[in-house]
Figure 1 (cartoon, helix red, strand yellow):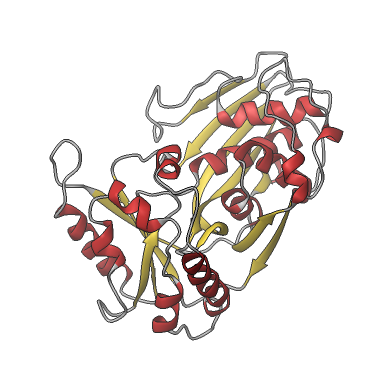
Figure 2: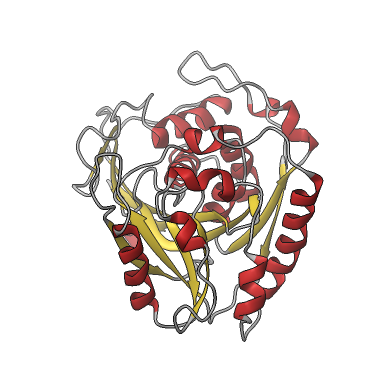
Length: 342
């Protein structure tokens, strides 16, 4: 018997104008503990009490971690071996805009890579993550870590249709190599992330459904100008709050999605000077979590955002409750730890 652990950082994406482009790995983790038994007992997956019973399937063909692992394994003509006891300890809330599905997908490819002895580089694992997720921003940040910019290249348009289950006959050579380009950029050590997490879920599919099919040129140019500046100024040793705030403005997605999150328009309108240390606010991914960039006064800023949420009501008519986490950027990405050596 031996043991190993897979740690996958959560992620936030977009950071204002970088819709489907920017991702940021955060020190909030999906942790997968794997015990490899010497006998042929069936492989199982379960979750600690942090994940409510019934909220995630324990069927290997339905659970996003294991079905992603099986997808990768089967494309290489193998499958997950018997004898694996998989226990998942997940600190990332589901459906809140912190990359929970992306971390599960990354965890799945890391699991297959180790359990099946594939020894694939992260660059190739990313192709599979994109195959499942459809876009690279969250999965790239969780797999590679740090502040990541990415795009899909023309090879991504030739990706074969997703087919789950044992009937999947896709072969690894059918999945193009290097379907995206990802670059890690500098993130200022002075900037921390404050996330204010409402206690309700918002499906990414719903958040995407409210976006228009076409945009005015002026709005596209507005975002291009700001995302270009933002990727540079977020790496400054001494952050400039006014420049970062303006560079975080967006006309592509938040304007359309804010109606799904009561209180968000008021929060997005907050400017530097609102509180000491505050730089700017945006949606985290597709929401409903709000992401705050700050240089100090983190807990107090988070508490103030909570108070704003409490002034608004959810669908049941109750004030919107939320909780705060102060997070640092995690630069290492997904890692495998051999517990036998510890």
